[in-house]
Every structure is written in C-alpha cells, then in structure tokens.
Length: 120
Image (cartoon, one colour):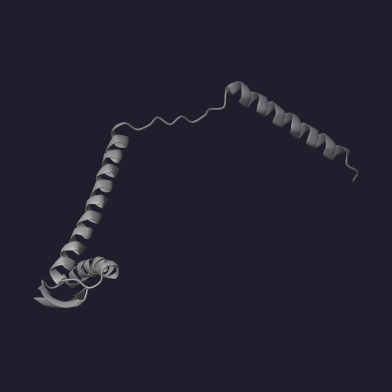
C-alpha cells in the first residue's frame, strides 16, 4: 500500500491507496481542495465537516452537469447516426459544361491568334 499526503482547505491528510493509484488520489484531492479553497475565500474559516460537505456537494453538482451534457451529446450522436442528413453535391448541367468548353476553346483560339500577330 502507498501513502499519499495532501491538503484540503486548511487541513493536511494522509491516506493509503493501492500501488499505482497515487496520482489518481492526488488529482481527486486537488479537485476537492480547489472547491474547498473557493468556499473558504467566500465564507472564511469553517468547521472541517461542513467544508468537506460543501466542497463535495459542489463537485457533485459539477459532475451532474457534465453527465447531463455527455448524455445530451450521446443522444444527439445517436440521432445523427440513425438518421444521417442527405448531402447533395451540386452537379454542373451538361449544357453548361458544353458552353464552358466552347468558351474555353474560343479563348484558346483568340490567344493563339494574338500570339501569331506578335512581332518576332
């Protein structure tokens, strides 16, 4: 077992965890401490149980909001997968393509004629 030291609010803690889980525990403690520090900045010093309760509730609220956003995104993705929108690519009509080819041929002919009239 590994021991991890961390601070939450105004108190130091030491917890044991499985080997390799130290980083996860430190990250979770840092999230809780961030919320606790925000509470302390607004309300000042308060009893440890109340601070931990409020910080935990704030994290739970944030987690719930993220879960709601993730669920909405998953529903939208499922909707798009089940009913993909039809995408139409404009096609140049054959008559317009022929007219453009004719114009290009005329332009080339005019360019050739102009070149032929150049001295030299």
